[in-house]
Image 1 (tube, rainbow, N blue to C red):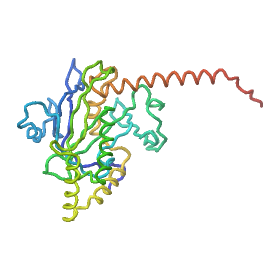
Image 2 (image 1 turned 90 degrees about the horizontal axis):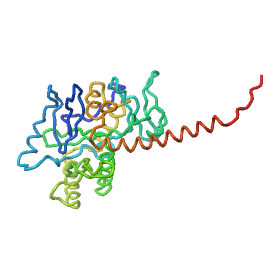
Image 3 (image 1 turned 45 degrees about the vertical axis):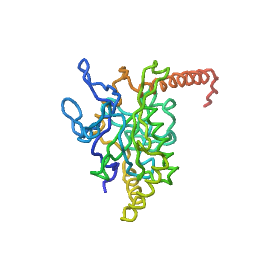
Image 4 (image 1 turned 60 degrees about the vertical axis):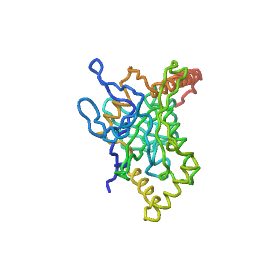
Amino acid sequence: MLKGLALTPPIIGRIAIGRVVEKNGRRLPEKDDEFTLTSQVQSREGWINHPLDEVLRSGLTGKLRSIPVRLLFDDPELNFRAHYSLFDRANGRLLCAGNGQTCRRLTDMGMHSLACPLPDLCEIGLGGQCKPYGRLNVRIGDDDELGSFVFRTTGFNSIRTLSVRLRYFHAVNGGLLSAMPLEQRLRGKSTTRSRRTPIYYVDLTVRSGMTLSEAISFAKAQARERTECGFDQVGLDAAARDCLSEGGFEETGEEMGAVLEELFPPEGQEPDDEAARGEAVASGSNRLADKLRRKASANRDSVPMEPVYP
């Protein structure tokens, strides 16, 4: 097995709530208020839609704001992986990824495991350069039971909601996440920080038309059926965990350009999405942190130094 390369869940498509558009000669992210399923192939006009996008839209009178999904794994953190992430905007390389306690950081001397403070206290992540970045892998349809669609987000609302939902579902049904009939939903809300305009985030609920009790009963029956036919979910989770631990970072260099273009706009460009709203909160914290650092520095300067004797 290759070392130094994180082996991620197989991806057969993307789930997006926006696109990249060209404005004044610059390619910039633009948010949408519905889901779009794309393939992994781009044309000059953007990502080419996946055939399932048309299937899900058939019969709809409105926009695509809910998708029936299943999960690959029982472990919540295998399905949704979120880290504080710092990217080099010039070349697209991921430089540091951490969870608030420990991080993996790429330096000139190689990969190192270090302590991870919160982004507003990190010396290299100041000014909103380091922010949460999450990846959710879900199954859509039955054509490929080990293939997944990936939803990527830097939005605080989506990251917080998805993390909580996965833990709750894992707790209430005895850990049978992979057998739960779920639905990925796009929700909207307004806040004072959004100037009362809607911002959108992603949620995970039980399938439409089902109660939580019915979904749990379905999951238990499905898990029994899969066990009887020899499907080893515990073994699959263990294999996925080992594969992800093989490398320093999850994304490869060839993926980073598209990720940065879609989720990390150029400095000075203010996108109209929930990531921007979250970044505004972070920048406020950064200003407070800067004040504290300046005060601490002033205090140090005011303390008389001990004389140095030969």
